[in-house]
Amino acid sequence: MPVLDWTLLLKLKEMFNSKFGSIPKFYVRAPGRVNIIGEHIDYCGYSVLPMAIEQDVLIAVEPVKTYTLQLANTNPLYPDFSTSANNIQIDKTKPLWHNYFLCGLKGIQEHFGLSNLTGMNCLVDGNIPPSSGLSSSSALVCCAGLVTLTVLGRNLSKVELAEICAKSERYIGTEGGGMDQSISFLAEEGTAKLIEFSPLRATDVKLPSGAVFVIANSCVEMNKAATSQFNIRVMECRLAAKLLAKYKNLQWDNVLRLDEVQAKLGISLEEMLLVTEDALHPEPYNPEEICRCLGISLEELRTQILSPNTQDVLIFKLYQRAKHVYSEAARVLQFKKTCEEAPENMVQLLGELMNQSHMSCRDMYECSCPELDQLVDICRKLGAQGSRLTGAGWGGCAVSIVPADKLPGFLANVHKAYYQRSDGSLAPEKQSLFATKPGSGALVFLEA
Image (cartoon, rainbow, N blue to C red; front, side, top):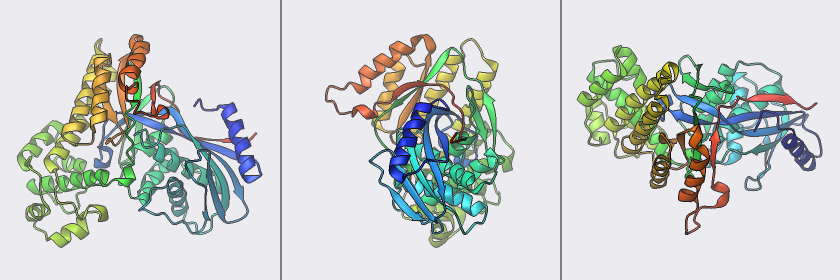
C-alpha cells in the first residue's frame, strides 16, 4: 500500500472500534519483501539483494491499563488471541499467526530487560500473501516489535530493531539469517538494497529503469517454520563449514558459517568453490562419516552441533549446499556491480544471473518444487529476461525481470498460461501476479 492509505486506515479504525469499543492511538506498518537474488545465504553470513514491496502488515494499536494483550485479525481465518503481557509463551510446535506477533514483542521486552509490560489491544491487517516467500511472517514480527517499542515509549535505531527482530523470530523455531527483518526496517522507496551482515548495513542498489520486476505466486504454500527442510539446510551449511575448516587445518569447532571459512582463509569466493571441490564429495554424508571427518562421537554431533529438529536426519548433502552458497554469494556481488556499471545489455546480464540462481536453488540446494520450475519456465518463455524462485522456496513465488515495454503482454500471457488452467485447480484469491517497485520501510503513524 502507499505509505498512508487513508481509506484503509479509516476502515481499520472502524473495525477496531467495533471489536474493542475504542479508538486506536497509533498504527504501525511493516512491508513484505522480494529477494531479487541471494537465496539461502544470509544465514551463512553472505550479502543479499532484496527490496521491500508495497504489500504490508498494518496494525492498529491501543495501549491499555490492564496487563492483557488482546490480538485480533481482520482475516477471519486467523482467530483472536489473548494472553497476559507478562507471561509470553511461544509454542514452537505450532506456527500460529499470533506467535509471530509474540516473537516481536518478546524480543523488545528482553532487549530492555522488562518484566512488566503494559497491555494492549491490537487489530492486525495485511495484504502480503501468506506462505508465499514474500516474508509475511517476518513483516508481522517486525511490526509487533515496532508496536511494542512505541507502546513503551523507547527508541532504537532501525539497525538495532532489525537485529532484535531477526533474533526473536527464532523463538518460533526458524533459524533464519536476518535479511527479511533488515529490509523491512531499512528499505527506502525507489531503491533495492544490498544487505550485509556483521555488522549489519544496507547500501542502495539502483535497479535498471528499462525493466520491471514481476512477482508470480506458484500457489503452492510453504510454511517455513512448519517444515524441517529449511532448518536441515541451515545445518548442512554449518556442517559443510566445519568440514571445510577441518580440511584446511583451521580451528573448526567454533566455526558456524560458510563465510567464516572464507574470511579465515582470506581467499575469493571463486577460490572457495575450488576448495569445496577438493574437500567435499558429491555423495551425501551420513552422521557416522561426519563424525569420522571431525573426530567426534555421534553423541557430540547430536548434542553439540545439530539443532533439536535435525538430530534424526540421516543424510546431509554438504558439497551441494556449499557449492550453492559460494556461487550464489558471487552472483549477488556481480548483480550489484552490473547495476552500478549499467552496460547496454544490463537487463540481459541481470536476467542471466537470476536464471543461474534458480538453477542452483533447484539442483544444488533442492529448494524448488515442480510448480515453481514450471512457472519460472513459463515466465522465461513469455518474455522475462530472467526468472527465479524467491524466498525460502518449496513453493511460494517466482520473481522475473521483464523489459518495461513488454510488461502488459507478459502479465496477460503468464496469467493465461499458468493461472487459467483448464482444470480450474488454482483458487482465484491466490493468483498473485503483479509488477512491483521498491517500497519504503516500517513506520509508525499516530492517530490525528
